[in-house]
Image (cartoon, rainbow, N blue to C red; front, side, top):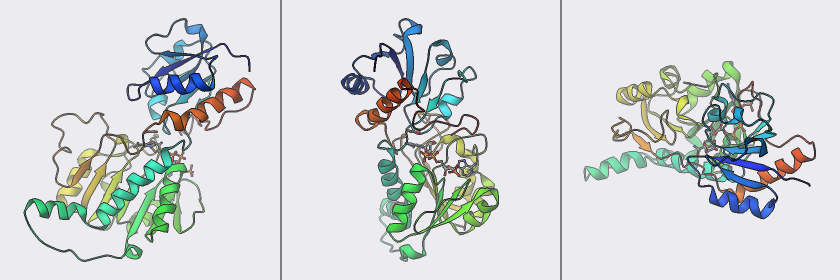
Length: 313
Ligand code: NDP
Ligand code: OXD
């Protein structure tokens, strides 16, 4: 491959060095540039980005592809000046699925085994066993059955949970009862005791974790949001916890990140907060997908993980 091109890296979440090292090993002919040291913009053919500032990508006249540093692309699609003719790709698993499933299994077990309530009891020095519920009687509901939600749903089913899943179109997954589309949402929710969100953030899914959704869950259900903060109506969660409609929540993602000081979630007894770490970008595991896509594009082939921009994921 004859490539003498630049790749622009932008992320406030990820350190550039592991990426510089990994890319340099695989494609030494590509110059790795880290924003704001862009250099000549006409040299930049590829951009590897997480939440780039609006206008950055539109200012690169010879850009051939935009690679998201994560599975989600909502932070890129927000840019009104995003160049429409440039293909946008996302990470497909690339080390994320295993981490997401670990987090989701931990959260499921946390609520299934009442660890939230036992830690509250411990603080009061209270010894109070709660009734055991077998996994086969616990319904775990998975919103979004793509690469990440699908992996978790199968692993939860293998552990013996009753697993229900919801996606836009039909999916066949071993041990998972699948509900589809708008008409499948209510029956999916009515039985779900632990609800986990793996949806991409799109105009259709924004605010989907709201009062109506919570009201359709059985009383005392728990929620786990590991997709995006924009899925959750924060005031509705606080009301549902206060009324007892929901029993607990584990949240990894927030409308504003980092979660601001003084936010009511920090000290709420029913909420566990983690700092967007359900699945982290590991350059060593992701670089192969970036390299493969550069090679494909240089050969005139379609890249992997191409995003349907109109659909939003
Ligand atoms: P995929 O594109 O593989 O899967 C998306 C799933 O959501 C599909 O099953 C899709 O259905 C479904 N879906 C999309 N829109 C709708 C809708 N309107 N109604 C019902 N179902 C819908 O994505 P991934 O699994 O790779 O990633 C999911 C999300 O996880 C990312 O977008 C990101 O936001 C989040 N994430 C969070 C991380 C963290 O650390 N907290 C780390 C990595 C990702 P269909 O298949 O029918 O189209
Ligand atoms: C992602 C994320 O989308 O880390 O990959 O949230």
